Each structure stands twice: as C-alpha cells, then as structure tokens.
Amino acid sequence: MTTNYTQFPDKFIPYEMNRISCDFTDVKHFLGAIHALKISDFDSTSYYVLQGGEGLRALDPTGLEHGVMAMMKRKLHALLSDAEQHSIEDMVKDLEAGMIHLSVPARHKKQRRLIHDIMDEYDGRKIKYMGFFTVEEYV
Image (cartoon, rainbow, N blue to C red; front, side, top):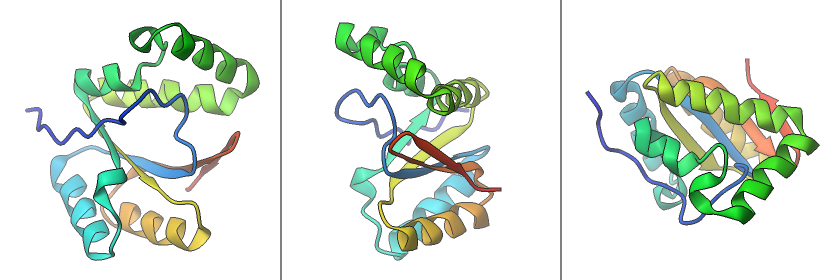
C-alpha cells in the first residue's frame, strides 16, 4: 500500500544541504514523527518527503529528469564527494524498498539534536545530517 505523503522540493536539489534526514519503514512511525515535529514547532512546509516511484523521480539520482544542469551537478557532486554520492545511492535503494524518506532543515546543532531525538524515538533509520560537503551519520 502506498500512502501519498509526498512533498517534493520546489526545484532540483542536488544535495540535501543543512538538513537532517532519515527513512521510515512504515507509515505509523512516519506519522508519529511528523506529529512530534509539529508539536515541537517545526515548519512542515519546508520538509522533503519522498516515497515510491514519484519520490525517486523527484530525487532524480542522475539529474536526467531536471535537464542538463542537473545532470552536471550530479556528476560534479559525485566527483567531489564520495559521501554525498553514497548518500544518494542509499536513498535510491531505500525508496525502491518502499521506505518513506523525511528531510527536515536543521542549520543549528540544537535543532539537529531535537530532530534526531524525534526521528530516533519513532524508529527512523539511517538518520544523518548533511552539511556543506559533509555527511554526519547518527548511530
């Protein structure tokens, strides 16, 4: 069963900059995390939520769906950072496996800690923060 909670970025995003993200294996945990973030006053209009085939098209791992500039950005990021490329490959595998990807803006450490705690409490998988050419994985 595919539940449509998708909220795509307005434009092509080659990299989830200054965001903490994770994947959920089921809708119940995802909705619990969304609710907990809402009562913690996070702005849900800035989340990225990707799921299924539509989520893969929005992620656009090759950049092909978004044109030549997007393809060049994907190639450039792949050359500059193995961690970024690996992150995108992981997201593709997880979306193909039916997981729901949630990405929330979190520039400040205090925000990241709170979002991490919420994601962890609701069984978020592969929780990570992506900064400028860095990927910080939470174990």
